[in-house]
Image 1: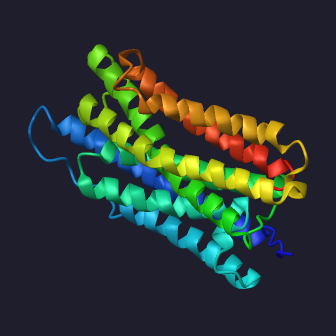
Image 2 (image 1 turned 180 degrees about the vertical axis):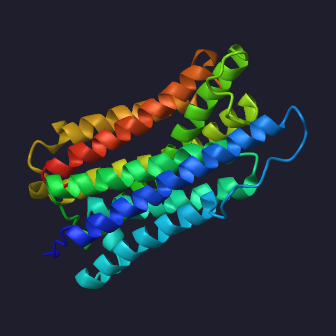
Length: 291
């Protein structure tokens, strides 16, 4: 039996501090975008910030705290695969994956608008993981190879879908800015062309959908192999039904090119709704038998 490592007060405080760093990075990046937009008409470079703290340094502080919590918990549990063992540590690992994606967005420069919305997403995911742990702790049966593949694929898929969600938010804000150029809302967003955002969204879904399919198939194989773990009526459980609905949402997004009615803002809204539904699936799985 896997040893349950519940979140401690110190770990919770560290996680909250990490969330504060990520939100600070979000605020700093937002200020940088605002300075860049104000400098566009004059062509002069934006004024230097009155302090040396940058979004990268703030996000790096959050990464160090999150990694510290994950490593300390892995050492206490004597499990190198702790990030694949329960929801709290899985969400921490997902936050680290999204931070790496955020750094890549920052490096590419023309996708910095997508990086902006990953920062609050990272903080929210960490808080959701902590909330799931405090509401009802559940360990995964990681000694089963199907479960290892299941959790690993859903984490990588969730990172892709989070990126798709961020691109959906950027698309909607950029579209609103183009439709209402005289309004102040969204003028701080230096968004890439809509076609580039839509292309990135499509690529994120193309990467995430096979991983979601693998997670669904391996989860079903594990349930068939060990039916007592999830109960005799696992096929009709909320987790399975919501996962099927989630699969259909992202399957529809794969056919955006073939269905013009789903392009543009509708695809953006579906990407956002799909990621929210994925979080609902996580919450439903936390309370059903077998996780």
